[in-house]
Length: 237
Picture 1 (cartoon, helix red, strand yellow):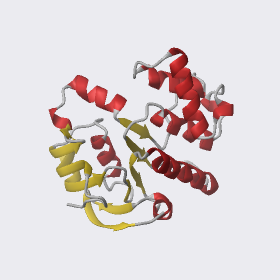
Picture 2 (cartoon, helix red, strand yellow):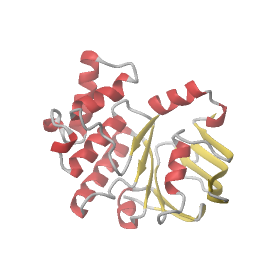
Picture 3 (cartoon, one colour):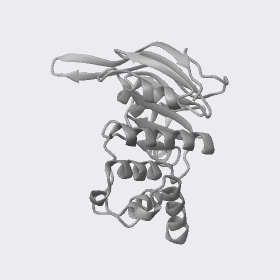
C-alpha cells in the first residue's frame, strides 16, 4: 500500500475496483487500487485522460460506489453508510472542486455559497459571515454580488473553491482545477490551493495531468495508469 508521510491514515482504499459496462464490454476504470493518505497531506494523483483519476475522486467523495474493495475515511467504511449518512458525509466532510466550476448561473457568488451553507443548516447573519470570510480567503470578496457570467474563468474557479471550503471540510477533493485556465491564472489558483492546505490543515487529494503544477503544491505525487498506481514520490513545495 502506498502510504503518506506521517503514518496516520486519514483515508484508505483497499483493493478498490470500479467497472463500467459499455455496450457488451466491461471497462475496468480502477483495478485493485491500494492507497493511503495521511491527515493533512496534499496528495497529487497524476495521469492521462482515462487513467481512472476522476473515478477515484468520485469514490473518495461518496458520489459513486465501488464494484469491489473499500473506501475508508476517518475510520468509516463508506460502503457501510446508509444513503442518509452518505449524503451527510458529502455535505459535511468533503469539499469538491471541479474543472467546470458548476456554479449556479442565476445566483451571485455570495448566493452560490449561501446555498452550500444552507445544506449545512447555516443561514442568516451567520451564513453571510461565513460566505464573506470564504470569499475574502480566495480574493474575490469585491465580486460577491456578481453572477458567474460576469466573472472571469479564474474568478469563477475562486468562487468554486470558496464554496468547497465554506463549511470547513476536513477533506478537499480537486479535479483538474486548472484545465480551463490560462497558465498565469492556473498558477494563481494552485497557489491559492496550497495556501488553503497550509493555513487550514485540510487534507487535499488533487487529480491532474499537469506534473509541473503538481510539483509546486503537493507533498506527494502518485501516478495512475490504467487504474493502477505505478509509483510515487515526495515533494517539498
